[in-house]
Length: 401
Image 1 (tube, helix red, strand yellow):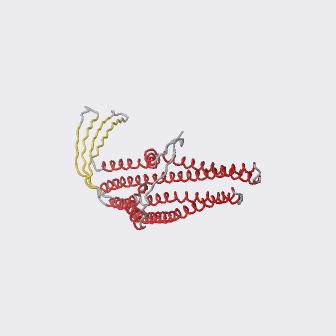
Image 2 (image 1 turned 135 degrees about the horizontal axis):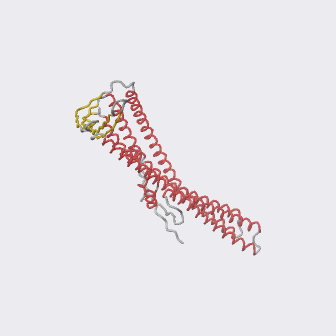
Image 3 (image 1 turned 30 degrees about the vertical axis):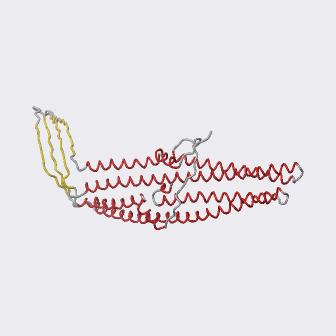
């Protein structure tokens, strides 16, 4: 049965829809949204209800019983900017979670493309070994015919059989590597098996700009850098939250209650309303410590951003240099393949004419196999490093044609 190859874009879409690690990251957005609702709710009216029943009896006296019920409501009027800052922090947390999710999506796409390219390279390498195996099998058949006719020594026939057997083992191993890379791809896509999974060649854009273009693009596009910038803004807000502990708070309160006691159990209503203010004048340095902790955390976040920018630039530079070298290798390995094919043709024809030795033929086969493997490696290194550079700038699939 012919297995239809799955395009790279389909593979990435499947991974984005099914990957459980990505789904877990997405849940962080929902958690942040609920935290924002909670923060906003703190500014609204809160209502409390309380009630109780008590009974007492002392020796020589009658028992006393009482019943109370109370409903109260309060509304914060001023909290030293604490509630407003908490709401702003929660809003920033949602944006941070969204940027983290977007970065996780691009990271997953990059992992899928890497596994996809690895599968293509392993398959192409397996095809090189199959071609080598077929060539050696053809040599073996020709030598067998000449040996039967008495034109070749048995040692040539044995050596040809050994080389054919070795090529079969190389082919089997390369196919095993191909299937392992498919398993990795299937895991990222969260599909059950690889029986219906195959890959097709990937076409990427050929343009190659200056390094400054990619560095600027990374600074503008990388979602993890945007997340780090928002965390710094959130750090400023958290300092404001800590400083609110030094300010007074004011709340409007209203309450209504009922009470009754032993006797006629007549219900007596009561109602109160007013404004309550409080100010924590001394708290043994707790607020001061919270402020200092928030300031230190802000410094840590600023240093983390600087480190993240340096790491991103390093990724861009590394991928850029690797791609430039891979493009050079692609040209030189193609020339090596052409020369190795010519060498193999000459060695084979000389051997058939009785003017050459088997060792020259086998050496030529090895040289051709090595040249083709190097060309395969360079071909997929170009694709791989194009995706590396695109991922470093924040959009892995932008290089697809």
